[in-house]
Image 1: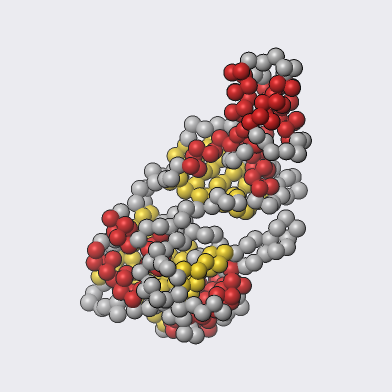
Image 2: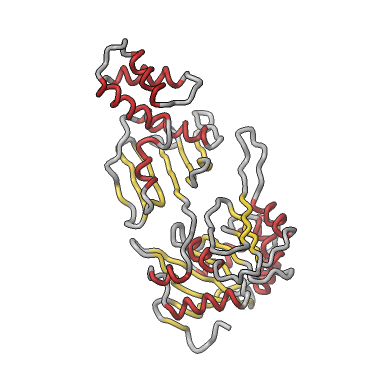
Length: 369
């Protein structure tokens, strides 16, 4: 098989308005080769071209690994993977820059997005896969950069997280008590620190006669609970229409007779609707939020509140009245663990006071309750 033949077959298939089955690809190969081609060469072409026209190409095996959280392509010969063993470079390579660009553009089409010289950046979801796509074309980047984030359903319960070393038995009981007493809480931490897994496990502790309505940007939460209702945001289509925002869905959730309202990730103006709901009788709500430490949470909330038109003073009052607990998750190379438990306090401003840390245990004799 020559590169020229592969290229001719590629162009033929790109213009074909039909499903790219193995038979279609094989027929195109034999047609472009003039009909004289060994079976081994046909199989080689099938493997190369199938990767280009289906799935995520040579990245498929990496994404199929249950330990993978991110697949990152920074150059044709630089494919990285992040997961349970940390960030590492793989042996996967692309033939050239054009191959990476073609894959990025095809995935963008699958996500209902446009990726070309006029629109060199794309962000979207690959349908039915739980994979978030981000891609950037040159000259914005030195070469085509492709980032695929794998969002796997969070299915661990508290016992499983305890066995994994996320926290010990004493803290597991503390967490169950937080849920049982209907104390609203935020799970915070960096990307990939285990926030969603902890939140899902805690929702599994909610009594079965209580109805949970959850708003998510992507369907990650999967608690073991009989009355779990999920609302999922929808981005606009390629024409810019049809968007359903997280903020709108929080308002819809209030009309669905929830006992507890949960926002999978608080990342924008929806913080206003969430705080309003928690201050109007919906106790025990929860959400996750990106923050590098509990001390940074008030500033992060202020920034998000500003997007929703909330003044800092009003936000401080609402948070202090509605949300009690901050659970901070951290991640090292191989382990995700609960690092700190804090409580909101309102004085001259809003602060988070630590009451327990993994390193030092309980801070003084003050109780969480």
